[in-house]
Amino acid sequence: MDNTSIAARGEKYVMRTYGRYPIALVRGEGARVWDADNKEYLDFVGGLAVNALGHCHSRVVAAIQEQAARLIHCSNLYWIEPQVELARLLVENSALDKAFFCNSGAEANEAAIKLARKYAREQRGADRYEIITMYRSFHGRTLATLTATGQEKFHRGFHPLMPGFKYVPFNDFPALQAAVDERTCAVMLEPVQGEGGVFPADEGYLQAVRSLCDEKGLLLIFDEIQCGLGRTGYLFAYQHYGVEPDIMTLAKALAGGVPIGAMLAKEQVASAFGPGDHASTFGGNPLATAAAVAAVKALLSEGLIENARKLGQYFYQGLVQLSREFPRLKEVRGRGFLLGVEIDGPADEVVAACQERGLLINSVHGHVLRFLPPLVVSREQIDIALDILRESLQLVLVK
Ligand SMILES: *Cc1c(COP(=O)(O)O)cnc(C)c1O
Image (cartoon, rainbow, N blue to C red; front, side):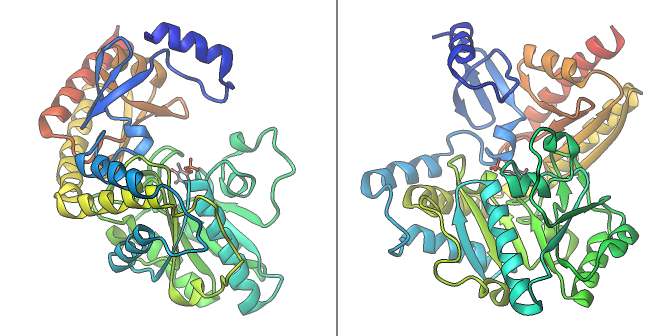
């Protein structure tokens, strides 16, 4: 089937929860994808930060094929070897001590919220349940994570929301300080906000938040679902800032494209969960965790994090150069390969013009262009992307 007929069938049978482009992606290799009409694109959407290793990374493909032929699923009533290996890899390469596995980012954050509530209740009493999150944050679409998400537009139509959440502006320490009260149990944030428009934490802010949490006995939860796993040029974004969380959530890139989520915690916090407190039928299943073991090993051994740091800087400079050529580009933000450009103009039209010319990018909130290239992208591919972007900006902004 071609793009048009797949889109037509989709309109008829698939629920309309997404605004979709009229193309169907059917094949990928590294930083490139092809649609059903065999048109080639450079993929700087990367499955929204999932395809960090590019498409069909050979080690991930091999791990999936081997594991699928051996054991696809078994219950968490039994030990699962690749799950144990994945937990070991994550713990030994992070500041956290124990891992719980689930199937998505929202589920990882649900687990974090439940753990924070249980820990606070046991340590400090039943009134300690409130979690402070940030405006412009994004934490997921389940009812609790939707409530944790500090963006009104995602709440509309779904009230009543979950009790126990409160919002403050990101990077505003006095506001956070003022919001903490006798009900607060945790602070939850993304070290680099992604969906909210690509806003990195200011230097010094996370240190201040950490000190406040220590002083007040609050847990600090980092949602690294988008910014973690090498994307910012560090394995975890918290390493860039030198501030350790008590709980950290991961998902997106963790299994090279296979659905997975993880919630990691310091030993003392993790011990608030006992058998029966939390579970997921598919969580940490052999297929997903075997893919994740291969993906994390590839991430750690193939120079990809360094690539994100170096070429991320190169790409950033290229975007800054474009912002000099086009005054309607207001600001370039981000870290590594999580970059955004604030645009005074129709971001959607720029996205469409790029797509037309063979470059997939994404826009958030109608005025921020977001770039999430795979960590395997080359300097030449970044140059091509910048050329396509320049041509598209010329077309849309100058005409
Ligand atoms: C994508 C994302 C989520 C939600 O992940 P899902 O897998 O879509 O549930 C949560 N937090 C952040 C920071 C994200 O980018």
